Amino acid sequence: MLQQLGHVKQHSLRGAQQAFPSDAPARRRASVVAVRASVTPTEPAPQAAQQQPPAVMLDDSRTQAFMNWARGPASIRFAGVKPSTFAGIRGLAASGDIANDALIVEVPRRSAVVLAPKQRNSCPGMVNDEWWKAAPWFAKMGAMLLWHKRQGAQSPLAPWIAQLPADAGVPLTWSDKQLAALQYPYLVAQVKEQQREWAALYDTLRGSGMAAGAPPPSREEFWWAMSVVRSRTFSGPYIGSTLSDRLRLAGLVAALVVGNTALGLADPAKTLSAAIAVFLFNVLYEVILSRSLKQYAICPLIDLFNHTSAAQSEVSYNYFGDSYSVVASRDFKKGEQVFITYGAQSNDSLMQYYGFAEPDNPQDTYVIADMARWVEGFRPAAPARLQALAASSLGAACLRNVAVQRAGFPAEALQALRFLLASDAEAAAGVSAFSKAGSADAEAQLAEALACVVTAELAAAPSSLQEDLAQQASGSGGKKGGAGSASAVEAMALSFRIEKKKVLSAVLKNMGG
Ligand SMILES: C[S@@+](CC[C@H](N)C(=O)[O-])C[C@H]1O[C@@H](n2cnc3c(N)ncnc32)[C@H](O)[C@@H]1O
Image (cartoon, rainbow, N blue to C red; front, side):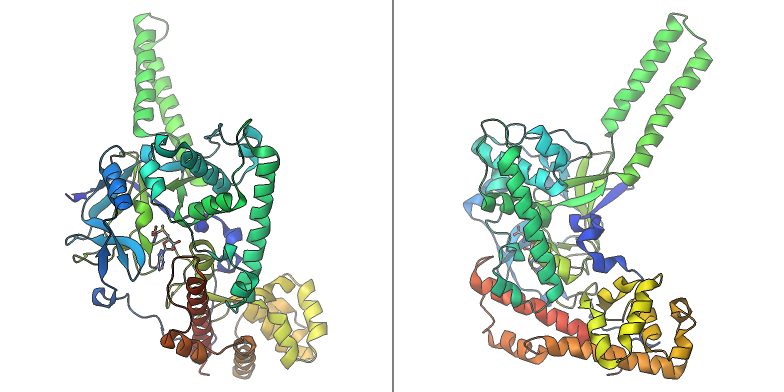
């Protein structure tokens, strides 16, 4: 039976990628301006239910065992959804009509894999304390996952572990040739960096991080665990104590007041004021702490929801129930796939950490790794001006990793380009004088330069958008095999580069090109 959550305070959790700006430097630049004043929205409305692929219910023995465990020992409350596949991708389908605001899934914290700030080594039989202290959050959670896996049937999470995907299908494990098919230097560089970082994490674990007597996992196992973590974890504010912890604290404080008063040790009024002050301080301290500290959670069953940026539902921590939940943000018809949002994510981060690209993703960007390279082509005097830019407060970095959205370029890149394109007399005013739109002529010149950059970036790709679309339509871009299979990788790279080229084409269109 579906239940309403009422007015309980919820703390939203986002796809864990959101928590780490360093994972997505492109998205840090919030201010993006359109090149021309009037920009027509290009985003389509959310997919209508009838356009979605039909749900095929999953009733294999692993899924059944998992659902029995969820209903039974894990005490996961759910109604109205069932694991299904949609065009081969597993997700959750509405098993009946679901009303807006209905509680769809609620997972008690004890049935989730949770990492709190400063959490002590949760798998001392697997890794030692030194490694645990130094490891990043996803490596710790990966170690916890492997520890549960090693427990086999003894793990309280065994039925959940057994149905996790064998391959996360992310580019981390792709060959150079497969990465090159993305036709996108920025993401290739990000993945290479991730490979180096994860290789180092594994070497440290193997070299000195294992608990005494524990055999190290293989590199494949460790990378699998961390990939599973990064594609299924949500992060959000950390609430230090649960409701029952706070009630216990209130009980203790009350007992001290009563004891003090009964023994005549202090003035009852003063004791009561002091007790209230202690209690309030404790609660306030935690509220303040919760703003700066993060918790990470993988919640069985909730981790079967797929993402769409059109969805409003997200994972929330329910303080009063000490649980994680998802509530419907609209009505769903029976058989429809119920999506949630993993947060505002570009296809770069969806591809790197989740292994897919969302078609027409409104959050998508195209990161031009080195814009100065193109500028030199149409501004022969650029080298001297580039040096002046590098010495300014904007710095040369504003032309590196420039995240272009469909609506246009970031304000800093526009400012830098106005400065680079200006006459020597105008440029003498310094970079700061170019933060706002200039004369109509200057802006027309800027628009032309931007169009040149975008066109050059498109032309540098080995195939055009039209060729890619034709390849996709003909089905020669790889058929859907299992995640990680050569054909699935090829299809994924093709769909990704199509989306990237669509972003650049939309930029050109919005500039009137
Ligand atoms: C939290 S899990 C969701 C459940 C997952 N599909 C499964 O079978 O376990 C996240 C993974 O689901 C897949 N996924 C999520 N949303 C998707 C989407 N819109 N299109 C394709 N795959 C998606 C990706 O493989 C991603 O790494």
